[in-house]
Amino acid sequence: MRFSPLAVLTALLVLLAPVPGEAAAQRFNALDFQFESGSVLSDLHIAYETHGTLTPARDNAILLIPGAIGDRHVFDPMIGPGKTFDTDKYFVIAVDPLGGGESSSPAEGMGQEFPRYTIRDMMQAQQGLVTQELGLRRLRAVVGQSMGSFIALEWGIHHPETVGSLVLLGPTPKPDAGFRLIVDLVNSVIALDPEWQGGNYSHKPAEGLRHAGMMFYPWVVSAGYIDRISSRQLSQEMEATARAFAEWDANSLVLRYGAYRAHDIAAPFHGDMAAALAKVSAPTLVIASDSDRLVGPDAARRISEGIGRSTYAEIASDLGHRALRAPPGTAAANYIDQQIRGFLGKPSEGSR
Image 1 (cartoon, rainbow, N blue to C red):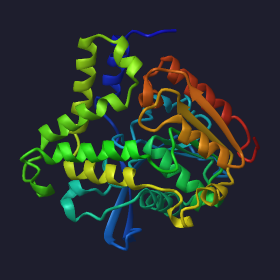
Image 2: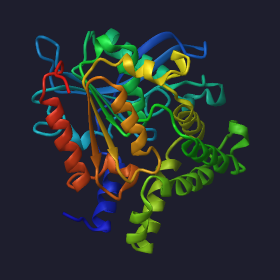
Image 3: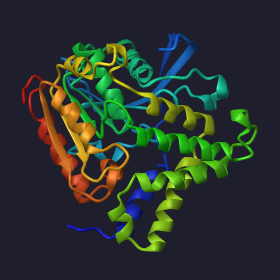
């Protein structure tokens, strides 16, 4: 079924809009949290929400991790009775990763003094939430979307004893040169705003953020998609992306994409990607978009090939990277739902 560009945009704007009456986040506090760099934050907090009920055996928990500019509500359309993450079956934990949302971030006053965190720092903070705050020894699944898939993969590498299965939407073992250049351009565009002041701003550089979002837009869809939509539709979608960027604190966005850009699963393994992937013992579902220009499917295939028990699935869509977060009811969203339901329906100790 083909959906009109206007229907897709309307659904996208609904997803980006705040939801009235959202429940307040719960908070996990970690004292003297040490970052990979050696920096220490005396009181780090991670915001999260839970949905559903733990079984008496405490074996049905699923952790959901959003992408770079998303928060814990990204997965909301997929959470609930009978949905992809069925709260009649699963205890669902939706989290704001370190550095954004309502978790500790530069926006809370530290600005440029906030520690330069990494993907592994984000994973370690979540590991504290799961094991210390929630008292869980094992997760039924860890699910990550885009940057969240980087974090989820690090869970599988560094805490295999805690992970029953992995679902990776748009992963890569290391961002390629093109992605790193895109992030450099995002930072440069923000820095061109006179309000930026080297990150020591008194007024948010909103125009710099807006223009960075507009520059970023062509990389999250495909050339074919841009070619088939109207100029009016293109303008509306670019404006929606500009607004999404402008909602962020500038330092928070710059540090978030800095962590995204610098990630390399092989770094703790002397550059040996195969050694890193060999640590993953959990059955893993890897999903990529065949038109993704930001984090291409070749990277996802390398991950799938390097994990012992892995299933690879590819979305046929011209939505590009955005297919990983396709609006409900679209072909891409239905395909993701089908793949995840089928995968989670198998025992977590099942094999390829």
